[in-house]
Image 1 (cartoon, rainbow, N blue to C red):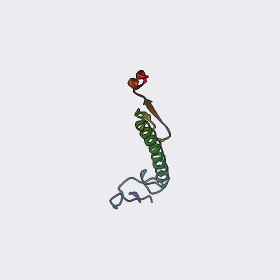
Image 2 (spheres, rainbow, N blue to C red; image 1 turned 90 degrees about the horizontal axis):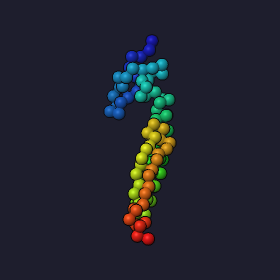
Image 3 (spheres, one colour; image 1 turned 30 degrees about the vertical axis):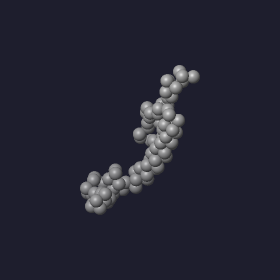
Image 4 (cartoon, rainbow, N blue to C red; image 1 turned 120 degrees about the horizontal axis):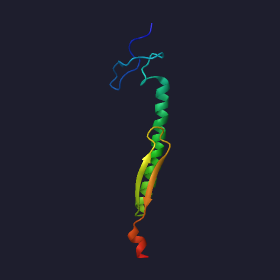
Length: 92
């Protein structure tokens, strides 16, 4: 007989009330989902580091940088617009 409650625990340490699947865990606590979520967290962190580096470098040079789009599902890519001040270019 299948259990009626998820085997997982909430962040507060209490029993999860989610509906379990075949594994005995709800969708949020299923081991396969946890592994995927951890991998995505790592990708999100790495993409964040790259974006921070690009934006920090652009600002250090006096340029404007803006994240125009970002993959918020797989955390694999982002588009960054970088521009220099046109005033500085026209002074030359």
